[in-house]
Image (cartoon, rainbow, N blue to C red; front, side):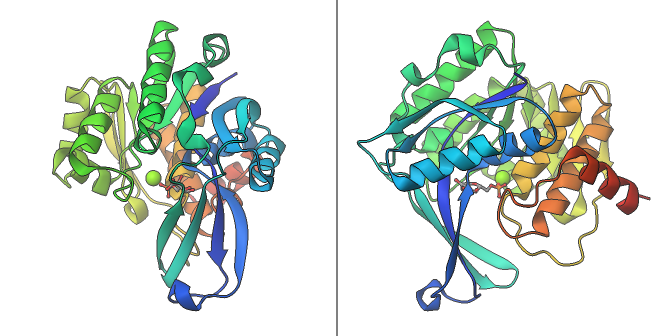
Length: 312
Ligand code: CKP
Ligand code: MG
């Protein structure tokens, strides 16, 4: 296996119309969750991935399992937990280009994950562990589970890639920051956005964010700059990657997870860092042009054609 991850995936209800949620009548249901978005992105590109989690023993849990499995992600370590429901979230598209999300995930099945859900032999089959800052914010036992996964990954000399994915509605600000900084300090590759750098280190300057991450011990740091591209830094080189221009953004949620899939695929292929980050920027851009988190994720051929066509 190439990449393993753990975290919560939910059913997303996204409204057909823009405007305040109280007036929305028609919704489309989708499957979404930061970690599976990235795993599905990698799986569509041809890499072998595995997901560790829990879903409710309900119809929506079955929907998530069949979708994630159907995208080629191994789900043999996803438990169906009959004692808790599958988490939900609803999107509000206030205007065409601004949205908010409302979670209904408190006490969900995934929030009941425990360190015992992780089988060392399974995790250690992968080259790389992918984690985000959402999972430790779900519950105390989820936080213990993430740190247990990190410990096992280190013991088995796996690389750890960390996307802080700060969710202020789930985090207690101070302890949340401490937890995410601890995760960053145990990771090899960190993928913050500017607002996440600001949350963690109180600066919006991408070079300063990189410095702070490196001080914590990261070997590679890639800062997502949204429509301005990305800034990367390793022990050998630093630089900016130009953005892929998007005419009309349809749905920006999930772009960060697509970005992670692109960068990780480049790292697995041992591409020069600049090329790996370029893949991340390309996938992030493609994802924003399609509704939903996973629906826009490209296969390798589509990605290569897009990069050739769009790139100068
Ligand atoms: O940072 P992104 O916009 O790429 O992440 C979006 C995902 O897992 C979304 O699918 C949602 O389910 C979540 O992040 C979350 O828990 O907020
Ligand atoms: Mg993100």
